[in-house]
Image (cartoon, rainbow over all chains, first blue to last red; front, side, top):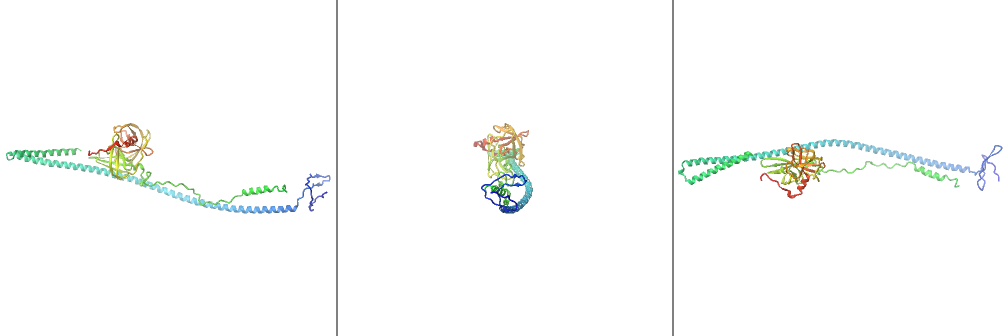
Length: 211
Length: 243
């Protein structure tokens, strides 16, 4: 079976073949090209396939475009939300820094006041202690003066008794015949006791004065 | 037909790969990005770190002792050992008719008993009320060069804190202590006797009891203090001026 050469504009003729035959093109002597028979492809099918493919591509492109636009909008909103959040935290940070600075200033003032108060407490405690020392010392002095006064009084009393007794004894001894000897002896002993008490009191007074 | 549709699998793969590289939707924006921080530890008033009036433990443990004797008044220093026991020198409390104790803030504390050590210039005074704060005793004596802080009432004046270093050890020049005593260059004065000497960690390393003309201060080391505290028979009632 021989095939007529296909020309443009002519309908394609389908041929049943047992197997695809491939032959190399051969230059003829008259310059005309002879194309070896190849498996024919239906043009309409190709157009349909291309149309379907184009439709699919267009649909995919549209879907992709819609998706990308949606993603873009979402990321823009996302960015705006982050920006708002950053601004909020920035404002919070600025407020926190301001509060911190104010707190530091107040703390410095409070620390200064505390230092002053502590110094004042220490000073008052010292003043109180010094007053206590002075009070104790004055009490010691008062006790000393009281002891000295008491001793001096005892000395004066004892000396007065001694002197009075000695004067009375001198009077008695001027006329001893008028008195019983044992009474004179007892009175003399009594006067000596007064004078001894005066000496003891004077010793105590000198001891206190020596302190 | 199989050969003519060889492009289908690569096309599907390419399509899937293309979908894979498409930008995803953004994740939701969090409502806050401030990280959580650990809670700040608080210092309660009345603890050892801080008193209601802001005085530190070093000053709060110090006490001023007035020895009202028979015809004389003298002052010394001391420090709290426990809530109702304070440590000072024997020569601060002996020969007294009355002992009067006051704290850093001028508060008066009533004294119940006083006892003195036989082999060291140390004394223990018991109080009726609680003392503000008590330090810890160091486990060992300090070494040469260690820093020392003395807190007390030099010349019976204001509460004073002085610093120095341990110079070394020597035998007691006053022969009032057995064993070695510490020598420091921390300045002390009459009235500082009984002051606590603290190490760098705030623990008691000794008790001030004397000074010399060169300005060096002498301490009863904490080892002696520990030894005396461990011997219940080492203390006896303090002698009074009334006999």
